[in-house]
Image (cartoon, rainbow, N blue to C red; front, side):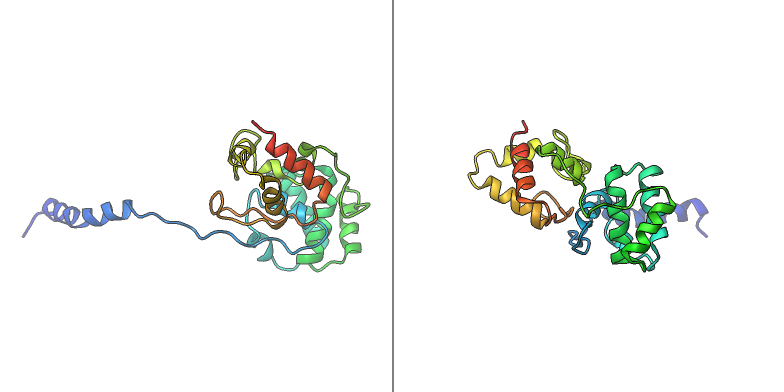
Length: 211
């Protein structure tokens, strides 16, 4: 009868080719394509929430009232350091409760009052006129650094790619409004259809000026 050591050695020799083969397997995830439902506040959800998780994290939640979404948004900002500006807390809560919860806008605004956050005066807080201000407002800087890659490419790399392209402003504008994936990898660039023409122009010019 063979010794235990001999059996272990034989098993190891038999399994080793499979272990080596498994070590070389390359797994590629499919490109992400989902984005939040269009509507007032969707741009803020795309810009802020998708920094850390996919749309499915929201869509698989049970339909709950505004108090739940208010607490979730504040938790993501206060406990998990999501870079959500104060001005976007209210629009985000109202958007999520209306599109993925059970509450109406009025119920969502009441929930905001309960947690000490003022209801939104309008669907979009005011933004600055410069490109960097626009990038900050819509959460672009959570995924793109000016000079380093975060989730998406650095703005200086985008500027370098389009430096000699006369169609650069149109291509970047389309990417901002329609989003997509595949140009810089499988991670989705969510769409921002409500960014105004003036904001888009300022943001595009600022991106292309990065060195």
